[in-house]
Image (cartoon, rainbow, N blue to C red; front, side, top):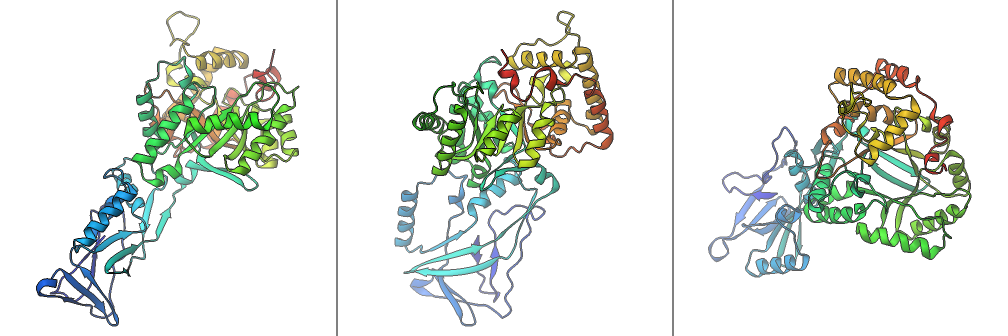
Length: 498
């Protein structure tokens, strides 16, 4: 923001440099109740001027050093070099500096208007413009104070969710980018292309990434990604990005030093001082070491190395034991889809009683719940897409256990009809249905970074509203399948069956 002074017109006006069109942002103008006068020093001091109104006055340099460029988008600013440069300007007589409390946000807003960044808020209103002044020696500073009012729409509210337990909480995007696909079996991942793809997802508002210590390079990719976010995006974007990781240890003795060592490895790989969420997996319930591990994780949380402790693939019985031991887990990540509705039985009931949330994976069944497999017959060679990834093979086994390919085709046809009605895709409908289930905070969609992209389908989830007819149609087909709780067992039991 720069002050524009016109001696011919006795009033103070404020102009905003390179501001977005008024249809995006609305500003309150500054009005003076009494005439404002300006006095220009002539002769050798003609570069200075006094702005005044009544008893208030300030003399400033007529050429102002604008500091908008420190807010990002003009190259990385080194603090010490920047201050040295300011001293050189002041020494040269250019002693007035213009800045704002919000200019890191200002850069974000401009990029947002250009649709380069994600849109966690649908509109912004900057009101209460006030020009204040201060004096440090002979150097003048003009600061524009602009309180930010964020206007949330219903769609924005559907995008973000908070998982919490007691004083522990984390806000995250409800559609989570799953990074299991970086571990091999889905195509070769190029590091630079993968990180570029992660930036595209974050810029589109899909800002939560899920990974694990056992997912190949996933944590390392996140570390590179988060550093690029720090360098190349405004702080507001960094504030929205979330990295959820898992720790999947062998069932050995869980000492404090062993737990700390492994968490430090993830922190180093992800290049963060504190993990947003650590989701803990345990293979063998006959070994109660999982309670020791969780208590040590909770200690690390209290030290600030972890923000929230969570679970993955725990069953209802063990979740209750963990909560009874006073361990404040915020969520449990479990397999949940239109085919696998096990979490909506015992697990969801306990979650609703305790406030623990569910984060779901397998929600689009590795891509089986898509137009790609609609009206296909796997029994006829080459008549259907190959089941050539670990996720497709895994979830095809779930289809077989649930009711077989013929019943699955009935489900796909029902979903396709609903998708056509709303102008969205089958995966979008499948994810939205699960997000609407009790206790579900977020649902995973696997990302094949640099190889495939589904940003539009994922973002369509937030505006989709399934009506009663849609829900009934889906439930009518879903209930024809077998009860997988009876076939497989509770959540996570598929990993512990011999």
